Image 1 (cartoon, rainbow over the protein chains, first blue to last red):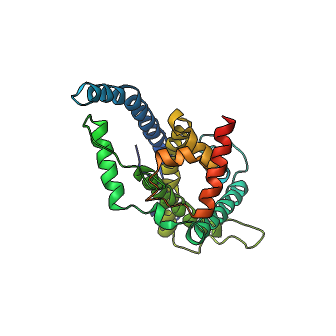
Image 2 (image 1 turned 60 degrees about the vertical axis):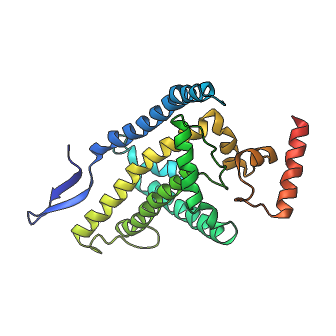
Image 3 (image 1 turned 30 degrees about the vertical axis):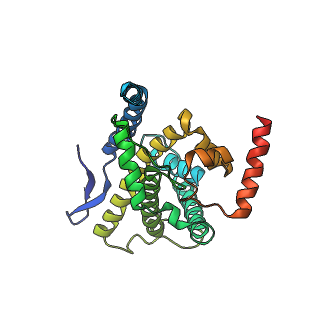
Length: 59
Length: 207
């Protein structure tokens, strides 16, 4: 997978065209990972941590 | 601002995904609308709002540390924030940086587009410099996708719906203010406080 898009100009030199659009799924995937991670944290971890606190003395 | 960002993402990324249409004119017009909206926001925030409410203070870091400890199961008191939580501030700064990069590079790229105001000049900068500008524009655009996905997700979370309403309508109720914010860190001027309290009471009576 390339990070950058390049091309060759009329003089045979490599020129930079921009960021590679192959990265698009990675940025969408990062968004999905953050969302799923947070949703799981709120649904599973946080209630369990609250129950642990409630069981502690003085809770 | 939100509409122009969505228009920019659609006109910028749909052609990459294979949807063919005349996107360039729509893209630069939406870009100018976004630039104007951001300029309006910056002036409004600096002149009429409190820029300090968006700055990261040591108290924000302490509150975030305690919130982390509590999330990990340690009993501790998490102080209420001022106007914004640490993560809200960090998100704001991230999206601000991303949008400012896209706007700055996009305005430079306008030189390569024919508009009613000027004729395109693709040789204004060297190939290498144009390459760097395109990389920055593309990288910021890709980053904005991740940030916007997270933004929309939080807007629809049940416990954040009151914040979504405040983004759309511009107000929160008195009880929300008292429950979610530290009045010592987010002082409301007397007149507007009385106005908000009256509005909150009328809403409370309606509920």
